[in-house]
Amino acid sequence: MPDCLIIDDEQSIAETICEYFKLFDVSCEYATDYEAGLRIAVETEPSLILLDVNLGGQSGFALCKTLRETSDVPILFISARNSDDDVLTALGVGGDDYITKPFSMAVLLAKAKAMLKRSAVMPRGLAREAVGFGNVEIERDSGRVLVDGEPVKLKPLELKLLLYLIDNRGRRITKDELLDKVWGDTFIGEGTLSVHVRHLREKLEADPKNPRYIKTMWGSGYMFEADE
Image (cartoon, rainbow, N blue to C red; front, side, top):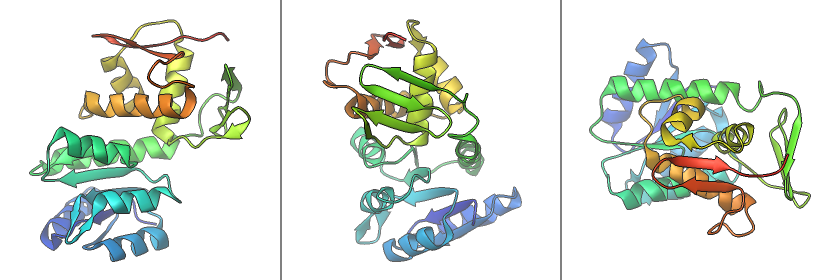
């Protein structure tokens, strides 16, 4: 199982990233099209995928949606497209982060290592007890989440974010604190945090547009409000 799979239709870029990562003991494989990327991802089960948005005549967004049907592998989009719509689409289809080309190889490596470190410790390592609020139940050790008794799938970062909010219920938590404590990555942007909060609301709140539990503190951050 490689640490990282790079899927980019520009072979020179994929090869360069692979060679650079290997210098720092991050094992890599790469693919240059949709079909090969999907096949290698299924066969090798990498710990992280770096995925380009444009894959020749096919879409990295579509590949991400396909992968998300069966896998929670962290996905970092790499793309020359830098509009807010592209970033939000990438996160909306299941991506964990987004970096635009051209990028520093050192920055890309730092982001990749941070994501690999996070995925290695989640969800295990969390305190072993159950918590609940409203119609939601969470088993910390397994990461299992139930809403009205039915299982709901949370990505590892969504689970970690939710538990951090719950553990600090009733306290205003700044965006910087969440980025530091949940992501542990100084390169993450506020847009990534906002999308993860939106996804949590959509999965857990009865009315995501008027959240009962995950409240926005305008201009500063978020607060979790619920009974024990």
